[in-house]
Length: 392
Image (cartoon, rainbow, N blue to C red; front, side, top):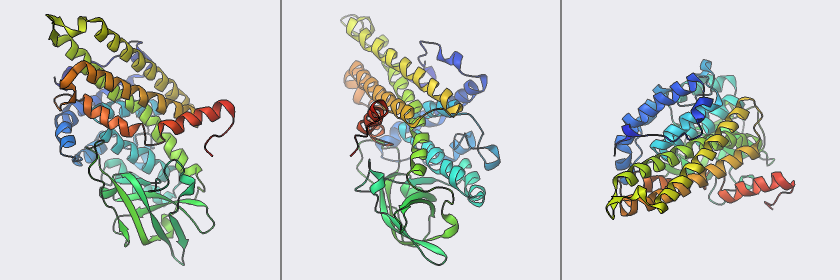
């Protein structure tokens, strides 16, 4: 099967809710994924290798920080356009979407939102073009779901901050040019700062032997008396509010992106079921296969409508953190379950690299954990319902 015959499901005509500009942007990204990602991604995943050359191409395509204003190198697009971009990128691979998502929501967004004008001018245009690769340092070896307990520290000196600590499970760590890092100062206040490749005391070991996100770079950020100039600290944000706002943007993108993985698995399963014959007829003619496909399409459709409505609320600046959390949790679980059902339809062929299903399934096992675990997102919704926090 080839990607050019991809037929995305749109059972409730969600495309009619998109503007002409949004459809045009999606079409351009879809064509790029078909042309540049699909032909190389299976081998990259098998080889545990990130196709880093695609970063520059994504910059040229305009998918890095697409919601950042044009004066800083972004495309100035709305949130739904950002969403459809993430959908198409994750149809290619979760690792490709992760690279764009981290760059856009976790690096460019905080620099634009919390950074100084000098920081915006210095970093954003290069990040938008893919000339510079960014990483986001929040999770630590012993502090994931509880980032407020981080132990990474900055100590103020005469003309710089001294940074010590470590961050783990960091996308792009070993290839990043800069990293947006969150650390506690002497008073225990969480601050954000920009750490640059080449600063003495910074090391970025890569994480190997992954069964998931194999076509993505994952690693650590280790700080040993790293001297960070004072002009690299974010002047306008204190506390967990900053990193959580970044995560809201990333989670929103994931809510759209996961749909792309699900759609690719569904489309693959439909075409395979029509072609594969058993007992003298296509397996698509059997009731159990049709039940699987019907459930898959239903769940994808619900996720499409959820993401679109969330995008409208984001454009109106009315989306809450709890709404974003629900969409991320629901849509990633949906995609994972669709991938598993698609694998069942493909039988033994579903585990091979001849089809994208197993790769998507394994990737989604990471996506359901990062940017807030499935369980934490359930508790966020629980708190929104009851007004009672269950984290402690």
